[in-house]
Amino acid sequence: MTNQEIKSVKKILSTYKLREETKLEKLKRLDKSAKSPARIFAYVFGIIGLLVLGTGMCFAMEILTQLSIVSGIVIGIIGILIVTINYPLHKKILRHAKNKKAKEIINLSNEILNQKGEN
Image 1 (spheres, one colour):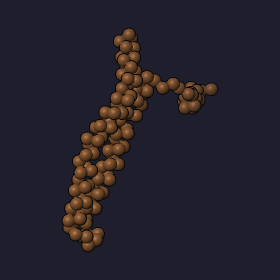
Image 2 (spheres, rainbow, N blue to C red):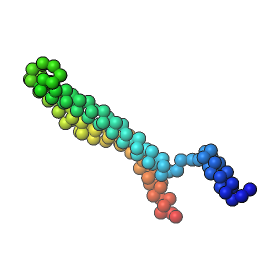
Image 3 (spheres, rainbow, N blue to C red):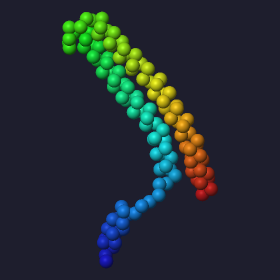
Image 4 (cartoon, helix red, strand yellow):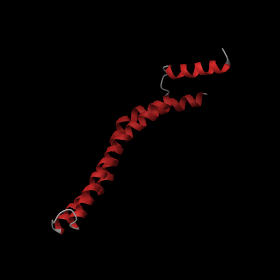
């Protein structure tokens, strides 16, 4: 068997081998899982707020229907309120999720840092 064939076999073997997750990979996964619910909420809630705001603008300019300007302004203000409270809600959800995972993330971080100091 040539060197190139051996390399090919090793490459194929490495794709099928089960490997354990390293502590750093686990830490990154935990950090991402703590942040993603808040991020997803902020995107969805922000898009909803922008759609409500845009709908209100269309109603106020009488583009979609012949509703009064006042109803369009009211709908637009509701959209502005939704967009305005999006960031504080995002921060609150993020803080809650971080507090939930904090102990595990801190312990794992300290393990990694202590191993680094020993080497």
